[in-house]
Every structure is written in structure tokens, then in C-alpha cells.
Image 1 (cartoon, rainbow, N blue to C red):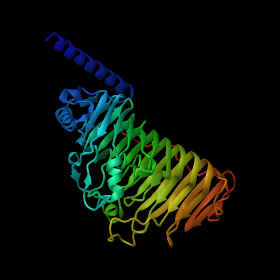
Image 2 (image 1 turned 90 degrees about the vertical axis):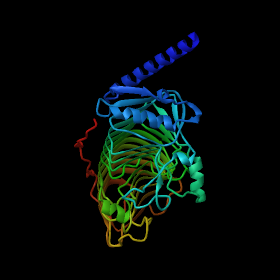
Image 3 (image 1 turned 180 degrees about the horizontal axis):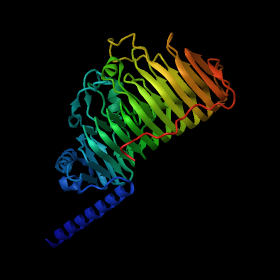
Length: 451
């Protein structure tokens, strides 16, 4: 009895100490501390890497949800390996993952519910119909934080990747984190690895901060995009390091007729201090699912190492709407296929019911202060026949070529724009404006509910 009492006392003191550390860290990071807090172990959690903790997560969050209107709550994940299936978050809530804690995504498909496809997509990305719910999921939330002092979420995606390659999936693969129809969202200070598909997917949401993430996936893993803001307003992505099998950041807003009908653009997006490694994809992609529109995107202080392209715009006939008012500055790139890539013939469609008269408008695209080395080709800029991409501006850009570069460095069709102080010399469709005509980059700030 005495030994049992001592053990329980020590566990209690450890929990209090860890929760106190958590609250201090959260206050330092500028997020208000929650009135109520609990540890996953309070709900039967076992961090041995074998025991399923799905019910423990679900029970903990259900219990803590009662405090949403009374100061909010925090769930602490202590050191250990916590095997779990999907669980849903609640409002005015913080999930804090200790630096020595790892969430291991279950490979048991029965622990992944199947949910409806996104209304702006009309179907799943991997297959017709529904999709597996994300590991960490939330909808219609206010004030939700997923954070840690660099705790880890491991999607154990290899099983999903193999099923995808073999065509064995009935539904679209799950993401690691998806937050829908929500406001005031923060995802920060975590390591995400081996996602079955996309890593972070805020969708139909506003006032979103994604900060201080390390995202890791094999560079040959399928569709392991890093961060995909989708039909979101006022989003900030900063201080992230991403190694990916797909685009490091992919900006989206719906797919063909479904995205046009849903009609929710991605706008007021800031991306800064991003480092990306992705040999077969882009550092930042706009599209290809952009049928709700993409506007007012500002990216700065971007580093790309061994990537296919720096910034890529992907669209096609049938997408409709627009990509406009895009501003990029201070990019440093090393070893890549091409720096600038715009494609008006990216032909993936959800079905055959898209409108062939839905022509996307691409305009006011600005790049300045770009340095790249070991590049195979400077740019491939291909608009839509009869509907050129317009208002393209590239200035103060130096592109150093690989030892075996393409003979044609600028492949330009159906575009219009200007250039200034760019090496190698751009194509004639980017009219040279002389040496001192910098492309625009707005200096005003967006208004956001999250500082």
C-alpha cells in the first residue's frame, strides 16, 4: 500500500509539473492559458506505442469540451508513443504535445471514419466518393490550438502509400491535420512526418496561423503536400521547414464546377521564412484546384533547395475564376529544374461535367529580388490560347545555370508582362523596362484576429 501511494504521488507531481511547464510555454508564445487542463493519462492513455489511445483522446476531448464557454481547456500529451486513430477537437481548446511525445497514427482502417467529400471538390482526390477523416480533425470551431515544444505526429504513411500505388484504396487517404469551417486556428511548434497524404489542411476557415513546423516525408512519397490553405481568409504561414514528396505549400480553393459553385476564395495569405526541399514539385504552388479564386498572396524570404520549381501556377480550362494579386520577394533557390512555371493546361478534372467556357484569369503576378543557382531552365510560362496570363512582372532576378542547361531558357506563350534587371534575358513577351523598375510588393498588413 505504501509503495502504491508513493507511485501515485509521484505520478501526480509529475503531471502537475508538466502541466505547469505547458502553461508557461503557452503564455510565452502569446496564447492565453486555459482555465482547465488534463493529461491524456487521466483518461486511460498508455504511451507504449502498442495500445490504442483513440478512445482516450476521444473521451478526454469530450470531457474537456464542457469548458468551452468557461475559460477553455488544454489536453497535455506527456512523453511516450501514443498510438491513435482519428479524433475530433473542440472550441477554446489547446492540444499540447510534449517534446518527447509522439502520436503514432493507427494503421487499422477501422479507426478511420469515412466522411463526405469536400463540397468544393465534389469527390475525393484519390477515388470517387468519400474520404478517410484526418488524424486530427475539427469542424465549426473557434479558438483552437495544436502545438507543442516540438512534439511529433507520425502518420506512419507507408501502408497508405503502398495501397495508393497498387490502386487498392476505396476512399481518399487521410491527412494529418484538417480544420474546417473554423476561426482563430493555430498550428505550431511540431514535427509532422510520414503523412498518408497532405499534412496540414485548413479549409473554409479564417484567421489561421501555421508557425514553426518541421514537416518530413520521403521525397518520393505520393501527395505528401506540406501545408495547403484551401478557401481560407487571413492565413499566415511562417518559419517552417518542409521536406516533401509534393508541393511544400499548395494554395487551393476548390475544383472545377464544384469550386465555382461553392465560391470561397483563398485570400490574404502571408508566407514567410519558408525552407523547402522537394525535388519533384514546387516550393509554392497556386492551384491547380483554384476554382474559388486565389488573391492577395504575399510570400517573402523563401529558400528552396533541390526543388522542381520555385513558384508554380497550375490551372486549366474548366477551372474558372482567377489567380491574381500575387507578390513574391527575396527568394533564394539552389538546384532546381526551373524557377518560374505557369501552366494553363494542367488538365486534371473531377469528372466530365466541367464547363469548357470557365476560363481562369491569371493577372498581376509579381516576383522580385530572386537569386537562384544550378538551374536547368529559367522559366516556362504557358497561358491559355486566346486568354493570356497578364500583368506578370519579374525584377532584380539573377539565375545561375547548371553545367547542362536547356538551350531555350525562357519558354513563353500566351503571356504578357514586364521585366527589369533579370539574368538571363527574359523572353520578348516580358518587356524590358530598364534597370530600376522593381515589381510591386505591398507593405501594408492584413488585419487578423491572431497576432
